[in-house]
Image 1 (cartoon, helix red, strand yellow):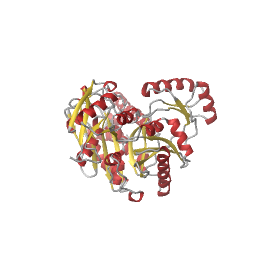
Image 2 (cartoon, helix red, strand yellow):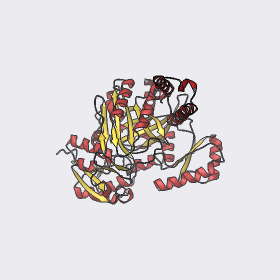
Image 3 (cartoon, one colour):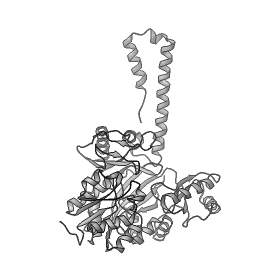
Image 4 (cartoon, one colour):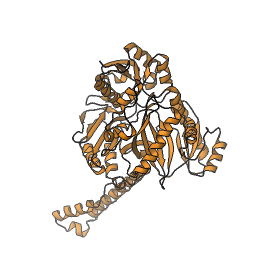
Length: 499
């Protein structure tokens, strides 16, 4: 058993691949890991991996994983000294660190006050502007009415973005291109914000057309030491949900990397934030960057940073929470090679609708440069109650080209039978010309989907032409030898391109 300033046992208030990821770090540090599970997750992989596991309620997350009182009681019952929230669920709910503090438990993350400050997007914008960090033009207070929203939009200039003040994950977000679109969008965004976050407040930003989304990973201890661990490019998104992440970013030179890194450090210091977090920015078409938000938790894409820096972010989180001072300086942080992450979800790769069912067969990728973070096994069900993310594939290479090649190889190796997954979608992204050349922005997925639709039309047209030619017994086909027909068909299909 290892005791880090009193931490010998940690409850992991999450499920799936992130719960396993945290438990692995605990295992390496000699710390006992405690899993929690709903009735639907009784035989889940994270339950079997942890040292101990406790049931906390029925399948719906609102009756199990989101019930803070049950999390706290379970941690105390199990004899834990600390709680790690992972991401999602309670990771950005200030009520959890507040409840931990009230019961003498260590919360592995920021305190409730800084989490609440940064979780409110309008308050965070005020803090960043005061600290001299560029913010996207827009409102700094929640909009009180449609009339106020219309006035703010007229001042900013269309298109604008309506966003939930307590938001995240693309919920409560609407793009508005004209004043006629604004009233209904305002209502829908507010309703979705209330449903998702319990807070209907909406604010407005100028909509940057197809920017790049780049974030900076930070670590901050309790002694005023803050460092950044370089950037992650997160521009491959669908409806504001990140799908592919990579590091380093193709367009950042050392000077810009330093400017953005310094801005991220300043943002963290201005908010009194501690532990691991991410400061997110948008970069416009002329290379100016703007503060977007702070994610006060571990990110889904954190392995990308770990692969290029060699630093275990979960272990650093635990050390900081236990009261240790950072033993890293900014000079210790480098960039070794390139890394890419693909988020694999149990979704139809064409429609992105959830796919649930039983995993009949599972072949996982491996080999040089491949890391797999998975919450599934060949004998498990994919339940309907939770986020469809089931695993993450991370590829490292000496350079970006090798990382892409390894990722494509890994995706080809990855076989999941029983449910549909987004693996085919990721293949389309990785061979897309703009992505390969590093010349992409947040509009890349919509362009890929449009190209895919055009290709389907092209395939349909070719097929229809072949059928018509055969039906009409066109001379140069009907008179040709059988071998020539096959050659002709091959030439016809040879014109079909993939994206």
